[in-house]
Amino acid sequence: MNTEIQLAFDHPFERSKASAMAECDRISLRDYVVDVDIGAFQQERGVSQRVRFNIVVEVKAAAQISDDVDRILSYDRVTEAIHSALGDARFNLLETLADRIAELILLEPQAQRAFVRIEKLDRGPGALGVEIMRHENDYEEHGDDAGVEQTIPLVLYLSDEAIQSDFLQDWLTELSTQEIPTILCVGLPDAPRIQTPEPMAQKRIDLLAIEQNAWSLAARDKRCVVIGTRTELDWALKQSNISLWAPSKLVLDATDPPKHPVEDTVALAAWLARDLGCDAMYVIGDETTLEQSIDIRRLPIKAHALTELERS
Image (tube, rainbow, N blue to C red):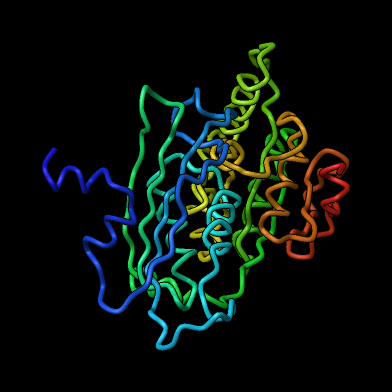
């Protein structure tokens, strides 16, 4: 094995020394193994697998060595970055997780460069992994979003009865005049669904049925745009549009998923509303009267506290 290939498979500590920055110290975390639910393949969902982390952080060299713990980058910050990243979302790719960990580490004022190697230990005969290197300047552009106030949308649940109502177009017209973005959540269609004894399969079937209902509504009115990812959702909150939530990806990727069955679609919508910072959400149909006089701008429709809707 020649020097370059050997170096490629060496520990990140050796790799960092090979591309050393001037006047820097290094701290490292070696062979830290955590059980993680990660992976893009269906057989990896809902199953924990062992993932090994090796991390080296290059830090600014102190002008004078001191035994003061407050003056150094604590090892705890490295492990905290791992668990914070894992708590933010469920990741499909090791590359995305590694980048998020590096970003969190480089928020520390002492950190200048981070080497992150992550390996899956249970997916093959050997360790399958990725290694990245990031510099503190790689994330400076993200600082502009710091302190920006989060937009709180109006979350409105439409029962299947409401979707079929003759007054639907009037409600959508009123919603389109709102100054705040609206997220519409729909329930299961009033039609038979495939039933299976396997819980994860049934969960996906029910989520897809909700999405079919959303796409059916979007086809009837071009003002409704179906969104299914966090990126699309964040964009919609900035545009003050009417968005229709397709829940599959956010629910399946969540680290804190809904506690109730997907078929409890009102509680599912409440889960989204809570995640978006709402104190309450609104419901048309299911315990409300479907009347043309409903004035959405004043919201005389029934408002529910999220705790009531989630039944937690």
